[in-house]
Image (cartoon, rainbow, N blue to C red; front, side):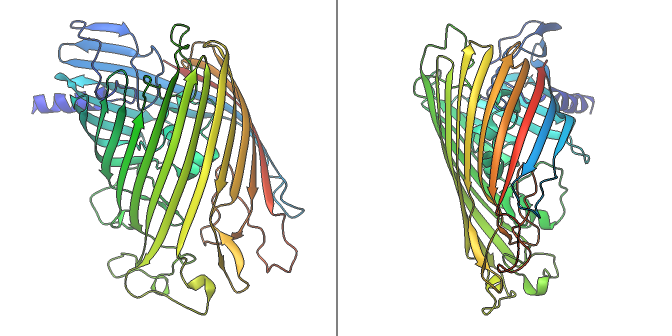
Length: 472
């Protein structure tokens, strides 16, 4: 029992987010009791340079790292008509992120583990990542646990390695959050990764009754719950890096000796997610009640695709991505179907798309970085209501921004200043749970028929943010 307890403690403390790649090897044993101020490379959270406190002994390695982001945000909401929400402006200091990661191996360098604790999650949540990996060979690794789902590049890149203070608007609409499951991964080509892949099967957990994505970052017991009611998710990502590995960052922060070599990568992500849900505005259940078991009679399945490209040369970075998502709704058994009422017919499907584009350049190598961002979301609309108004779940949105980074000591000590302009073309509220936004809760255009006075059809935001990040 003592040995089992010691092993359990090692698994808990020794796992972390900034682990070496599953197929990578450690720098080697440094002897019993050896302590190094050193840092590893982290594919899941970005390559952040040398950092952390490392303990190494025979058959065991533990690395501890922490990341903190302290931010000032000013948000000005404008352009929503005389009856709009122009007054919802604010200025706020906050600790946006405070995380501690543990990583290493036990017994053998092929048995690797990671744990990431997020001290700012609140509501009793604490664990972001908890992953165990058997690095069987570079081309084949077996993984299990909870991790950020590797579906699209920008989301999988660490918040500590972003060019802007936050990931973009379109990423926040399409990313698949954290997931629990099992997956295989690998690299073919060594230092020139012709193929990188990740494929797995996961719980899938419905983000919301009008947000048909996965969000499985909490603790769920082994009991029936509508939140995991027959949910299932499959995920695949494939990348190629034909001229050498492109680091998992949103800029080209390579050294003077490396930056003159051209690097580019192309990635493809596929995700399929099916679940039951409860939203009477989109697909009414029988008189609004589930079955005796609590299982809803309405379900959805969503297929999402992303294609992205990444170019690096002489401090210049270009990152572009296209997103597409299609949701179909299904009835299971008797449902509240009313052919004479448009909003009760049941929406046949929803199809959303978006693009992201970021360009950055280091004016001073590894020190002063500037960049621009352009995001565009094309959210699906549908007709409903007695007057056939144009309804929807999300507003069509355009986001534009500029950013300046000063790398005092790389990502380990970094000051970031960005300015964003976000324009949202408002819709009529098409769901009882409201219209979904990213930086605010967008208002609906009007709660009255189209012939009456209503608010402006656009809602605009200005965001100004200053952030200090330190990693140790």
